Length: 369
Image 1: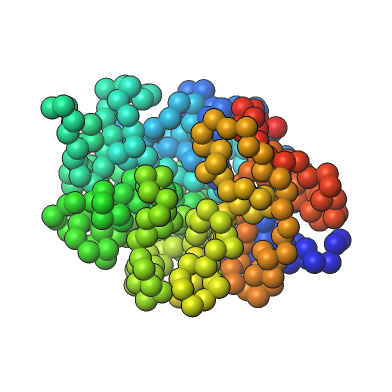
Image 2: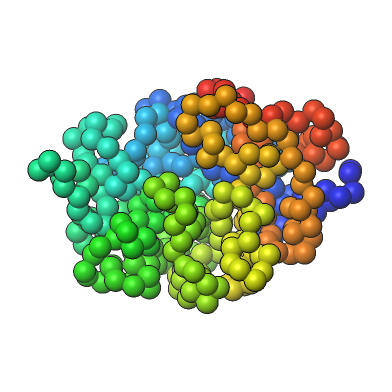
């Protein structure tokens, strides 16, 4: 093994979760599951990454069983016996290769648009109502709606445990439903779910507590969160380490085992006066394991590829990442596009075959390999 990369191949354990490496496959929407059911191509896609030594696979976002959870065509769901049977086959394939896997549980909230499957008549659901031209384009959630969504996430966690998943990840980032409650711009509620950030966190806290009670203490719950939003890349929920600690502690106390700290570029400091990134600060403030993410292994950040472009991201040095990992700034490293385009990326890194690593272009999004 190439000595400098040894840190990526150290085992990690948290209770019953034992990973053979520190590399995590980041969740990436792929839209190759017609009817919401993972098929043979999806099974093989995840199996290949486990076979290459990826320690933990976090699936693409999978919608929970609520009528407004979905926002995009052909994304998989995590409810219904047909979809769960498909996911169980994914689990079996990943486990056969020595890997671990968790589903990312997802509700898009107000981002949902009219005409979206499975029921085109259902509008987006969000913390606050939005009306355009006399039509409700976002349904402001009632207490009953909130309770239904919490139950949908809880049921998904129970189903994940039942079919052999190794934990779950809650998608609480990027301006989707849970994050919409966190974010003052989208949460204008005047009840107990609105107000300051502590009150805006109530929905997530109740959801996490419900899931934890249902799956018990030994089943890992990961929370992905972000400062940036799809609607505003410069958005910041908190401005200081003290505010970050106050935001995260109640979430940790509710039952989060691992924080997945989403940034666009992992090397960027989160606050002035320290080189620590968001995962570094989160680990220091909560004492919980953290996952870092953001343009790992590539020289261009992913948002460039969300629009039609001929740009290509080339393989990049891992030196800074490895230094941070060796310094225990964070515990795990999520890799997205580099693994999407090259299922053997980790093998090539381990063997020092950097010249063989594939670059990433938007074309890679058009197929599963």
